[in-house]
Each structure stands twice: as structure tokens, then as C-alpha cells.
Length: 539
Image 1: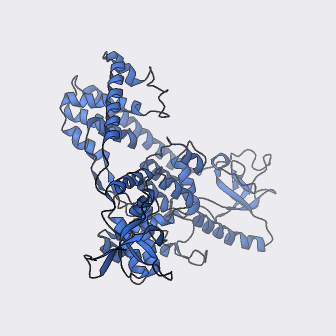
Image 2: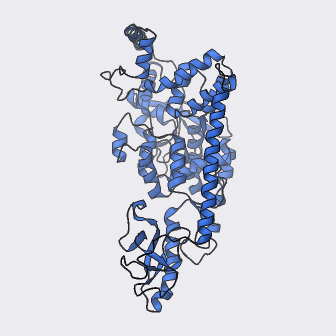
Image 3: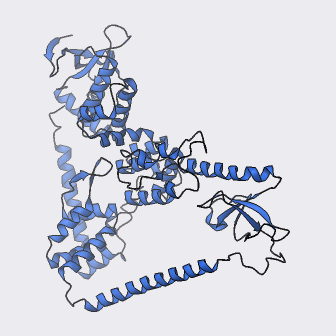
């Protein structure tokens, strides 16, 4: 083997050797787990022509046979060299500890544009596990030149359940989707995954379907806020009571409360939001049991009642009476059928009531199940009046605006209509409109720490710069852009004749057959040009 001494930018010196590939073992700690096979094949073609121009980095194999090495950095070059059927690879050899090895792997991967976010997250987590006193969120953020919020968000991705990881690696989910899901508990993560792909029942079905598209991040976030998050300030139990459910402790100190984890929930302003629905329900049930116990000790058998109707429950419980199946009784001895009951859900959970469930009860048969007090009736009447006033006022305002609108719309009216229409199109159509207009899809920093394209901000800037004629055209483009989606990506499924796009093309007498032929010629020439193009010289 020929050797050359090379000095690294750091203070350590390493030798560069041509090492047989069979004497190198891939590192088990390398954060990178995904490799693009197409790009790997391109790199292998380059290596066949020009060799490996940048040496890989190895260290003597720990506890291994002399002359064998562990690959620290350069997994793509190593794998591509194997594909190119080379026998050796130039490699810098350095004596490194396990921690130094992992840190170099992490930094090296971060400098690659195609490193997967989950691989990056695993690298951070591995360093923290290896030396928790040395590596913290703060020190890692400083070392990699990122914010603490960014590193914390990446670390949270390691909490993804296996099914979500598979969909993330398969590019079915964006990093924004993954971050929203990673903040949830495992069971809720699986629910969120199915919510992202409502047309698919299993992860396997999602991965198999090449056209599967996730709902927008905004839709996912709205579902999480509606179905998962709970406001502790409205809880029926004392949120600061650590004895109610000893295993969970106090909500005030719980890391799953948004106020206690601002790095994980930077965009949620309300600090008293619980993200663990199962734990919340367990505390409610613990409160119910506390109220049931003295009744049982006195010899009574209290019933369990819900303040919600049965049709609202996805899985009605057989031992629970739902609204409409009982009457609330003001007095304990109202009739022979009166029974004590404990409310098991809602803001009144744990409240002890007395109910009658006899449909033909001689005392209560003439009473309805809903008996509001006079004060409640008066309050409800005021609410209904206020609601009617508000609704009718809005109708009158809109009608007055309609009458004031000129024959030729003013500039602010056109901008408002155009941006409102664009906002309703959804993320995928936002991207399509940008590409039709060839607007620069510049990424900006999102609230969760990652870089993302804010299409609404881009459109807002561009629309305000348009003249009135272009604004009108923009509205038409927005109404037609959804027809750019090809269902099935199948050549046998051409643009439907009754689609808005086809009808508009016909109305403006466009020769769609000619356009199709021009596109086919253009793409064929491009394909032929690429096939003749020589591989790049860089390896």
C-alpha cells in the first residue's frame, strides 16, 4: 500500500492510504441510514472514470484485527466504490475515540444537503447518550451553528413511532408533518398518521401507493388541536394535585404541558394545554373513583352518567347512561326509582347527582329530560338575541358592501379576492401556482425551526405588484390550477373533457393536440441529451 502524509485542518495529523475495501467495515454509529440509489449509481460511474478524488476517513477497527478499519466518514464514496468494483479506496487514518468518531460523523453529514432529518436527529441523540454531561441541546446548537429550538425539534423526531418513521423516510411526510406528529403520544401518533392519509387504512397501503399525498400541515395541526389537545384550565380536577394520580404527578410540573416545554411548543401561546389525552382521562377517572368510593361505602350503588348524547361517542360504554337516557332529579327522594349517579366526563366530571331512568315514572313522567331554571332560560334568551343580532348585522353589512361595489372593482378589492382564493387552494396547489408563474420558492425559517416555503407570503408580495389585468388573470389561474394534478399519473388518464382547464382551452380556441406534440418533442430531446451527456468529473 502506498501512503502519503496529509495534514487535516484540525490539530490532528492523519495518514492517507490506499486501503482494500474488504478491510473496511461500515460504522454502526453513522447517523446516515438512507442512500439514494440513483445518485449512488451516478457517483459509481464517476469513480470508474476518475477515481475517488476526496479520501474517506477511517480509524483502526476498535477491538478488531490489525490492518482492519472502521469507516468514520464517506459512506457514499465507500458504497459507490464497491459498485464501481474497485479494490481499494484512498482513506485518511486517524486515532479517534468513540465520541470523536460520532461527532465527526454528525458534522460531516450535516454538511451534506441530502441528509435525512431523522438521521440528523439520531446523530444528536447518540452524542447526548454517549456523553450527557458534555453534549446538551445548548452545546450541540453552538457546535453545529443552529438554534436551540432547531436542535430540540430535531431531537423530538427520534420519538416518532416506527410506522411514522417509515412514512417519513419514504418521503410521504414532510419534516413539518413529522414534527407535528412527534410531539404526540405513541397511540396518538398512529391516529395522526391515518389522519394524514384518510384514503388509506394502513401504513403499508400508504407506502405502496406512489400517488399518496398527505393532507396539509395546517389541516393536520387543526385536527390535533381539535382531537388531541386539552385545556387543563377547564379540567374538573385540581391540576396541581400530585396525589390524584401519583404515577403522573402534578400537571403544573408535567413536561407534556405546553407551558413547561416552550422549545417543543413554540407556537402555542396558551400555556395550560395537555398533550397526553390518555393521562388526562386517567385523572378524570381517578376523580370519579374518589367520588364513587364514599357512596359505595354507605351501601349505595351509584350509576355512571355522561353529559353527552350516545351518538357523539365513537364507542359508547355499556355501563354508562348517556344524555337522553335519564332525568336529573333535584331531590334525593323524588321517587322510588331515584338513584345516585356520578358524571364521568366533561367539566362536571366527578359531580354527584340523582337521576330517574324510569320512562313511566308517576312523579317525573310529565317532566322533560331538560329542565332549565328560569335564570338559565333568561340567559339563553339573551344569548339567542345576541346571536341573531350578530348574524343579521353581518348579512346587512355584506349587502351594503355589495350595493357599494363599482362596475370596475377597485385595486384593494381585487387583491383581497385574489389572495383569499389563493389561500383556500391548499399547499400542493400553492406550489403549482408558483411554478406556473416561475416565482422563486425561497425557504424561510418556520415556527418549528425548519426551513420551509411560505407560499402565502410569496403570493401576497407578487399579487400586490400586479396590474389590474394580471390580477384578473391570476384569479383565472387559481380557478384552473387544481386541474394540473394528474390522478394516477397514468398516460391513459388524459385531461377530462368537462374539466375547467379543458373547457377554458376550448373557449379560447387553443390547439391542445399541438401543445401535447410540442411537449413530447421537447422532453424527448431533453432525455436524449441527458443520455449522451458525459458523467461529471467530481467524485
